[in-house]
Image 1 (spheres, rainbow, N blue to C red):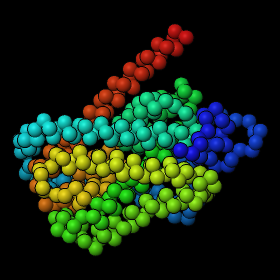
Image 2: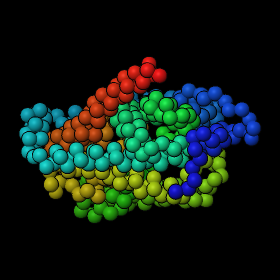
Image 3: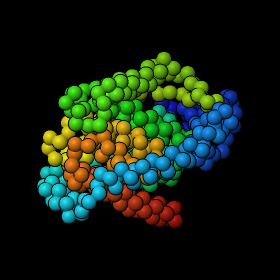
Length: 359
């Protein structure tokens, strides 16, 4: 792994800065996390269409949520809880254990990405600390929504005692986001390209659209690695902001782990579906599209929007098994981790407060 500076080094080594400070300049006071994250986004006046974009960002989530309600009502109309419960009773302990294990593995891989992101940002923390921070911030951020701000705020609270600055927290949060994005892109693209004609015929995705979108998604993920190779160590200016990209090794690791992590998350739903209703390759293609739509919606966890997208893209799957798989996915990957994270965060707060009182 390429060298990452210690957290005691100067702010000039942090990847996300607007203007690198000159040598000998005094260290500025840390800004609030929201400001740090906002600094990596374009200024409102940076583009003539900024006003239209802001309005669209307020309207699109509402439109997607209304559309999701309509789709779910259409797809699951007449479906009773008894039908869903009957499907869930037929899963067996093996399928339930498999779904829980997959969820645990996904959070474990998020911890690896967290550790890499912290090192890239210049913060050297133990692996166990990074894993705990990743789980708490990920479980709470996924469920509540506004993942950059919520997960970043949780990280700031946990890592402050280790001397991690808010800038480093923001950089770590964005590194996690980059890994998720390129990993999901590569996974979804691979699924759309590898799925056979017959497998895609069972979905609502036309063959030509699946192949074209798959190629573009993989090209985008590989292009990110290529840019990191060409521009490593040299700031990239985007919308009047300067971003230092990861090394090629870190970029490849983030891509590979992101693919595996997203693939495992998708498998949580897939293993709960009846055997043979859809191939894994075609399913991950639909899963990637649904994830993107859910993120655009701004709804916490993409709830409703994510499910409506998958049910639309997989019309061959019956309503009851699909609804049961959705419920199992939400329980294993959202609700249970959220409960554990809230208890863990509360316990950490109590222990830290007692420690400070004794100091």
